[in-house]
Amino acid sequence: MTNDGKGNQLSKEILHLVSYCPLCQAPARPKKIRVLQTKDDNQLIHIDCSLCHSSILALVINSGYGVTSVGLATDLTDEEAMHFQNSPKITTDDVIAIHDLLFNYL
Ligand SMILES: [Zn+2]
Image 1 (cartoon, helix red, strand yellow):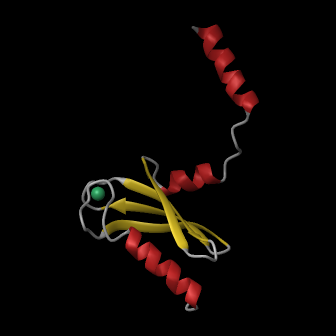
Image 2 (image 1 turned 90 degrees about the vertical axis):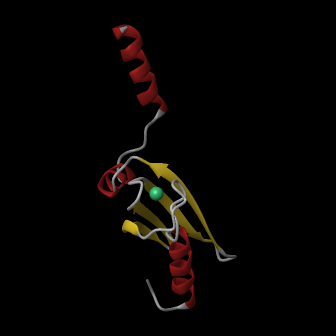
Image 3 (image 1 turned 135 degrees about the vertical axis):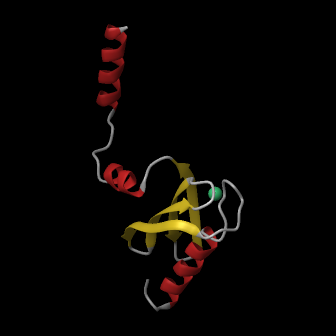
């Protein structure tokens, strides 16, 4: 994190995100927090809860008008999230190929 105003604002948002677990609602210290990607002023972070052992993938967005975050529960580890973050996107042709494979297999 930087020490400028934007960096401090992102730090406060991340601290708010990890001040409690949205799944077990416990005010707890996270087991592990990892910043997976930083692009411009936006960060993708992975958080493991030390109590319920759930994981959250959160995108912290600094739009210039304020800081917002979007989080979702995931069963991905931080390493798996990074792997899929850098994987090629699934195309329509990929979905049709899987459909055809399953349709012909069953
Ligand atoms: Zn939890």
